[in-house]
Length: 134
Image 1 (spheres, one colour):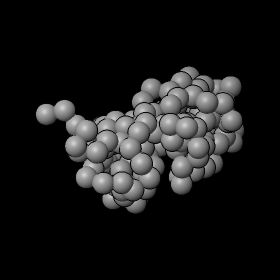
Image 2 (tube, rainbow, N blue to C red):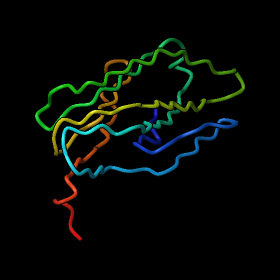
Image 3 (cartoon, rainbow, N blue to C red):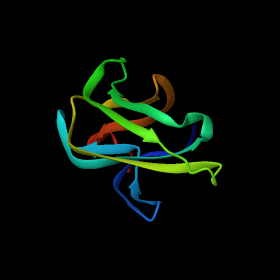
Image 4 (cartoon, rainbow, N blue to C red):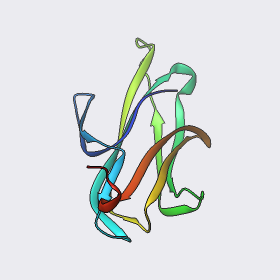
């Protein structure tokens, strides 16, 4: 498996195998905590080779800066199928997140595991507006 894209964004869509990403970000600013971010999306693009044909699992979890598990854990079960005439296939994964709750300012991490192996960590920084440089 090769991970090509992993981002937190405002929105992502797919059309004809293409991944369209709108508003990739790594920082949320708010007036107070705890806060709820209305909606966002985790967008992933991976490619798979013939030796990965079969069933797989992606686990996505959010950790705070102390390593504590956030309220969000997602499991995506999927199957890789590759026609004989192709060397590999690409697959997009779009995970829509509603009402993302952040308890306090700080650094959060979205950990992405593929078949129980960590493949990436996507950072998210939460700041008070008063802590934002002008």
